[in-house]
Length: 220
Image (cartoon, rainbow, N blue to C red):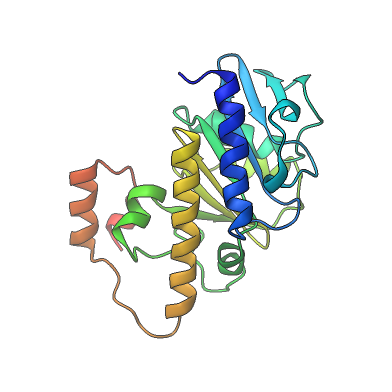
């Protein structure tokens, strides 16, 4: 397992990469990583492009501040994913443009915000739930995530942005990037009647790569 010092450096490195590529502007977005006896999380009002490893927030297993700056107000959102996704080692929440735009469209299915457009979307993101709008930091969003019962690793918050959990920080970041690119594809193809992966192709991916997809997707 990575040392805490290594995890701090990883959070700053990945945060800067996401910021520099325009995936979360200003001081938006937050990252957390599970440690031996708690969590590291980015501070409130901190730009992901200019994080200081020494100032990252350290929380204990109960969510109490141990050291560092005050945490992001989205801690309940992160905790809800950790509690319902037992294997999650990291959570990334961004305000990436195409995913936010997707979350506002009227036709989006809350059980499957994106159709099966590409194999890597399914392999990295699994499937994406859409939750209704909650104001940023509203504790009620945690209850909404818990209501998904751990079936999703990627979630869209309406009019707000995507949240993705992963076994590692790298996995969560890569899945977040895949989600954003797939949302971009959807917007580019909207109204053009594109070919989606067939149920048989989805089943093949599920079998070969051991995907854990919500049951309804297999019937789509």
